[in-house]
Length: 323
Image (cartoon, rainbow, N blue to C red; front, side, top):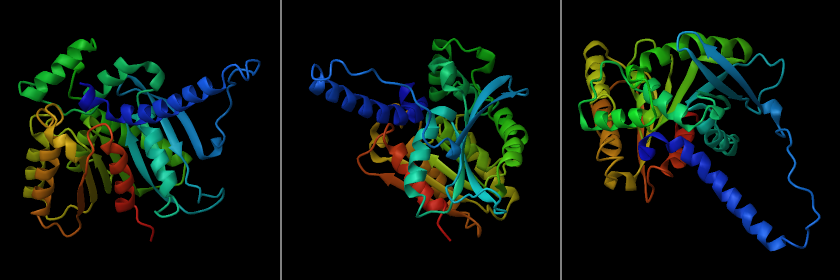
């Protein structure tokens, strides 16, 4: 379960652990010499004007969402310009990693808002796991396939309502499009015609599934190690159905995964991450859609836990070039 459903959390946690270990080493070295020093004191975030956070209670989902909005440094109050935006699923847990990558690249890519939506971190790990399994997965999945059985077991372990174990993707997409985005766009100068969507692992599947939904407003998709086995191959059936009724797919797509994921018995053996993005890349490339741009990369020596950082950075460069 940890391998496929907690990649965003681990990317963030990894950086926190590194910092914590450094602090621990430092404290060992100076213990005794500064015994009378004061303890650590809380402080406000140093640049609050560039990150604003909100809580939204969704009537349709019956859930509370944490929403973080990172404002591009190019934005000036009173400026009539509107900016593109990257919507980040997994909320508080994915936001720091995506934000750090964006800030580090801000001088070389187009200025955008980075907006995360997801379970508040203070709600705890089990709530995060239960909700993303439901919100990121397609309807009408009997979970009789190997990955479905794996997900069912996880739902049982986290004491999920089995009627809401999976199948919430349509409702979640509707909540984003019809509830949350209008509120964000009313408060910030976001250009609705330049929206992107990011997801990793199970969230990456949700973003892939969204590509073929008729109510999707997104024009850019950043997919990090998507668990393509969700729904027992539904994204490939959706892709085939889309091709029967459309002559173009005017979006940009970036897909990335680590080469080590290919040999992982859970990530690939059950989740079909590497083979899944390869199959989707081949299918879409073979359609020769005039408006489609697709880039797929396999990051050398990286697994499910660390490929996300590379995919985010490479995806931002690919999908948001400075004009």
